[in-house]
Image 1 (cartoon, rainbow, N blue to C red):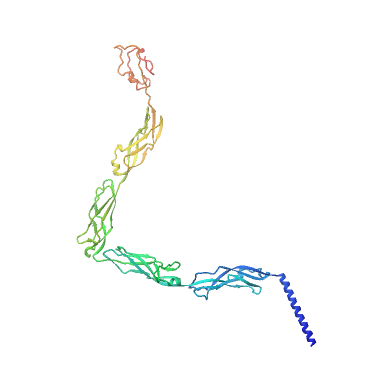
Image 2 (cartoon, rainbow, N blue to C red):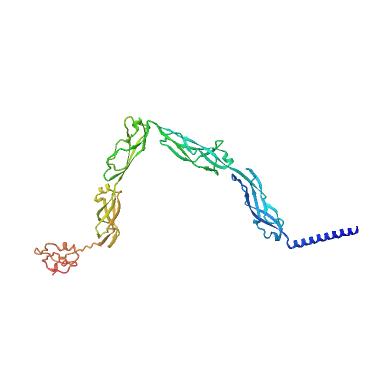
Length: 464
C-alpha cells in the first residue's frame, strides 16, 4: 500500500510538472507570437435567385468583419480568404430578412471571426410573369356622309406584358382611341395602347416590358351605293397678259362628294365651269360653280375656289444713257469721259418695255470738287421700283474740271474818228472778247485804217 501511495504521489507530481511545463511553454510562445485582431472589408455575393424573380431591394455590396488570431497567423490573411453569401434559393416572393453568411476558406483553428457588420439584409423579391393583355379600340366621330364604317381590326389583338407579378396582375386591358371625323378612305394607324387596371383607372407600365409596344388599327370606310368621291378638274382657258406667265391653277377643295345613280357616277369627271385667265397680270382667286350633269348633285354644298398664280416674266436689258453733271461750282466747267455709259437692267419684261428715256438717268455729283481730274462712279436712277440696276459699263468715268477765264479788252480813243476812219467787218472788241491769245496768232479778221495812236489793246502787241 505504501508503495502504491508513493507511486500515485510520484505520478501526480509528474503530471503537475508536465502541466506547469506546458503553461510555461505556452506563455513563452504567446510572448513571442501575441494574439492580434484585424478588420477586413469583403464583397457580398448573391446566389440562388430564381430565373422568374426580380429583386426590388438588393443586399449590400460589401460588409466588414473582425478576425482574431496570432500575429503570424493573420499577417497574410486577405479579403479573398473569405466569402460573404446571401442565399435566396429557398426564399418566398416577399420582403424578408436574410442572414449574410461569412465563411473562412483557410484553417479555422488559427483564425476566428469575432464579428461582422451587417449580419443580415432585407430582401424584397417578386415573381416575374408574362400575361397577354387584350386591346380594345374606341372610335370618336363619324365617317363622311355617303360612307359607312366597316368592322374594326386590331393587329395584334393581344400584347404581352412582362414584369413583377403584382403589377402585371392588376392590368385589365389596353385601349386605343381613333378619330374618324369625316373619313372617306380606309384608316390605318399605329398607336401605343394606354393600359387600365381592374378598377378602370389608368395604370402605369413604366418598367414593364410591352411586346409589341404599338398596335395597328384598321378601320374600313366603305362608300355607299349612289355616292362617290370625285376629284375636281379646273376648266380654264386663255393666256395671261403679255410679259406674264401662268405658274399654277389650284382648286379648293380638291375633291367633292357627289350623289346620283351608280351607273352615272361610274366614270364621271367633275370639272368647274369655264375660268377665263385672259389678260391676267397678277394672282387671282375666283369662286366658281361645278359643271355637273343632270341627275348628279353635291352631297354637301360648299364653295369651290380656284386660285390662279401669275408672275411677271423677268428679263434683262441694256440701255445707253448720257452722263449728266450735277452741282458744278461757279466759274467752273467740266468734261466727262466717256460722256455716255451703258446701264444693265433686270426686271419684269412689261416694265422694261414701258420705260422712257427720261425714266433712266445717269448723273455724276461734282459738289465741292475743285479743278483737276476726278474718277467718279456714276449714279443711276430708274423711275420704276420693280427694276433692278445690275451694273454700269464703264463702272467709273473721268471728269476734268477747269476754271472759266474771261478776258476784258478795252479800246481807248484819244482823238475823234472821222468819217473816213473805219473799223471793218468784225470789231476788235467783239472778236477779242472771246480770246485771250495773240489776235494775229489766232488769225483774227482785223482791218484798221487808223493811226496807231488811237488804240490801246490789252495783252495785244501794237499794230504795225
